[in-house]
Image 1 (cartoon, each protein chain N blue to C red):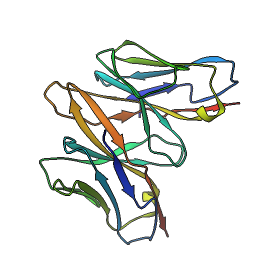
Image 2: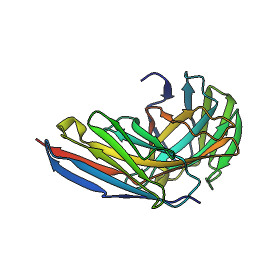
Image 3: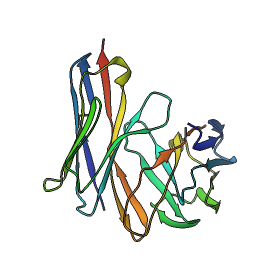
Amino acid sequence: ETGVTQTPRHLVMGMTNKKSLKCEQHLGHNAMYWYKQSAKKPLELMFVYNFKEQTENNSVPSRFSPECPNSSHLFLHLHTLQPEDSALYLCASSQVSGAGVAETQYFGPGTRLLVL
Amino acid sequence: GENVEQHPSTLSVQEGDSAVIKCTYSDSASNYFPWYKQELGKRPQLIIDIRSNVGEKKDQRIAVTLNKTAKHFSLHITETQPEDSAVYFCAAIRNSGGYQKVTFGIGTKLQVIP
């Protein structure tokens, strides 16, 4: 349960606030992910980082800004969010090889975000 | 891009009965198919997975089958127990140029009635 941690666990913010979500993985993985989980929708992949380089941005609005200072830490900076951005934000990590072998993703506990 | 369809969206079974959840995928390059269980208020956790070179895998009461030709895979839970109640997600993953492309199904809410 402590392999991937996220803080804060709950966050309430106004539309004009700026906040950051933090994720840390202790598994020695080289890839990290941000997902958005809303009711009645599939998990939505937002950003992917491999070896600290952003390799995927799934058309996420610019009010979400990721940062990956090293392979163990991942941040999601939030500014001028909208009420529809309220959701559970999950971080995950995995080990990715260049040999084409896909591996399991391990999830953090998530940050429950409410935008007022 | 990849599209993963999962059904049913909700499933109620009596304790002791079996439950089956099905997923179909569109990208033939997907080669890894994990299943996650998410209990209320908790993180998704891997319960079983299967790779494209295997047709079936079993772990106690849980099994997964994969039909590559038809591009579908299924989760089977036998002798269900109340603690199996949760949301189950399938995923299709492929390793593309050294990074993973992941697509999740919409999830199935399983309720096991005591």
